[in-house]
Image (cartoon, rainbow, N blue to C red; front, side, top):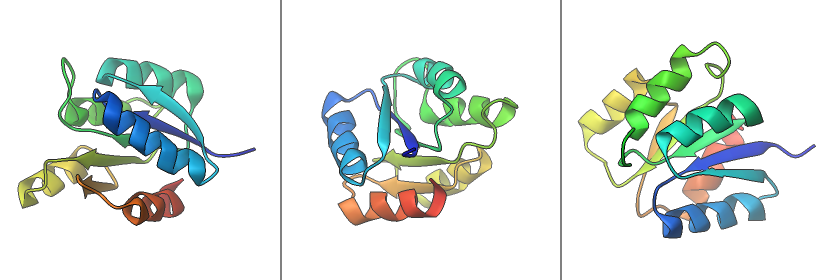
Length: 120
């Protein structure tokens, strides 16, 4: 069975681009367009890993990651942020929320594949 990756972004362009990279690497993809949808899908789909944007509407990536980390159902799913936020403080805060890494946009395909190999 192929590993399942949940991709979370409120930008259709970013969602589509990430999905093509992940699918090309032979992973199954599940998409979410908001933090709330990501939490629900993570509980139902039980992905092997989550790639998530930080800057999103109602519930940002940090809050979503915190909620996932605090729930016994989803606490063991590695989260990697893919975001335009790239200050040192963003990396520290991402780690404090439970994220494994932060890949900054614009990213290279290898950046995504390396994280998939490490955590999925």
